[in-house]
Image 1 (cartoon, rainbow, N blue to C red):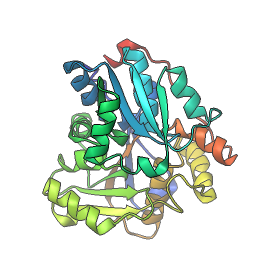
Image 2: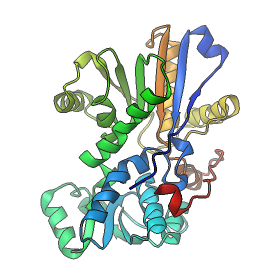
Image 3: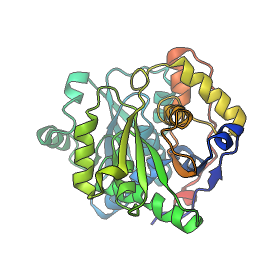
Length: 317
């Protein structure tokens, strides 16, 4: 049903990487699908196909007021003529640039108090929501689902088709886990994955055991690395400075919640020798650049903001 366009692969070049004898390739998912950029559309793609197969009349999903997932869902719904509803964690600030964009794409927004929202993954809660919205196809927060993993796993297939380079290490940001699971299921025995956790208070050991149990990969092939750097979505001025420097040096824009923290911590790990010399690294740029405007609005920062490419219905199909 949907386009099979490939995002390009870029290679970073700098004295820092030369000095440490490390190659970094970036799968540039930030360059595809306009407002649905990055792993967001990959995680939505098979949900949208399932929606078309069912007699549902709208898509309902969950997220925070700055959510990349809600942003992509609202955009896809608008482009594909699918009504959408977003259950928003906490209050709605109409001046928030993400909220303004959700509304411009005709997404119906329903605020929910944070205590109730914490139940979003409970079966009874989902049944209650389904009762309130009987014609809705419900997508979990962040798209997290086997269908999302299926879409995310296609990243690996594409990379193998695009380059013959031997990838020693795959790197991605970890939020809901769908992208990590999708990639893990496709890796070769000698390939390793480092997932950079941007959530604070995460139980790394339990999560790693779950990921290994679900995918069967050897324990030595997976590392979960703390990269919240003060907390999920929290301001970190060192990361802000890094994002600006990275943009000027490599002409690649990063967001301050996911990819900015990922690359900041990755470069730290390279500098102290955690990444061995002669490594070829494939980093997944998962998009999320719409969040920069919301971050600047929230904290009064002046990070360079992203302007999405114009996209039309036929660009998705």
